[in-house]
Length: 245
Image (tube, rainbow, N blue to C red; front, side):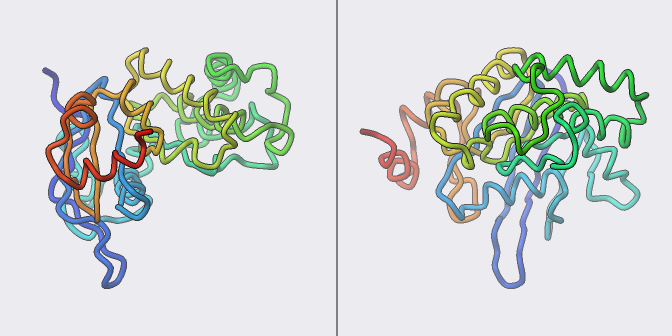
């Protein structure tokens, strides 16, 4: 087996006196699709934001190919270009077209030529079904379409790992399926993905591994069969009971 892409060791995060993450340990290997589930406020999104350095962990380490990215002298912008993120609120630039949204980061961060960046962007916009909308601005497309553009924008940066922070939570129910379908296709293509989600069917059917968080700690993790079929902890049983008809 190849070395892990990411290794999180003893990670903790406090906001003032509020301890949000406590002693988190887990590993991300090439091709992993890991769903992080748990109630709101359990620390899932904060964990993702720490991994992408949008928040600075209070203690612990995050190793990217064995190197601690929290060490002095690490180029954090370069690291972020390898570990992309898709947000629940899309975070598209409203003054740019769909195509420009997918080109800007490539030019600015990866220093690609504009023509190469446009070609690369179109490849991924076609993959997520948004090629017909390249000249539209975000206000002219639906929430589901915005999220598909956000996924294409992240993919155009050629990340090694893609982080999804509740990518369907801001969508109307009828738009959830189109985004989950794109994510499922990405998973099947071998993309390494770390997904914070309330979509239990996605976690059960698409993930290789499921991490259940409760009160700032990893309560239990394992295969979908282990977590959904044979959970060991009572907290996991109680959480999953809410989703069963």
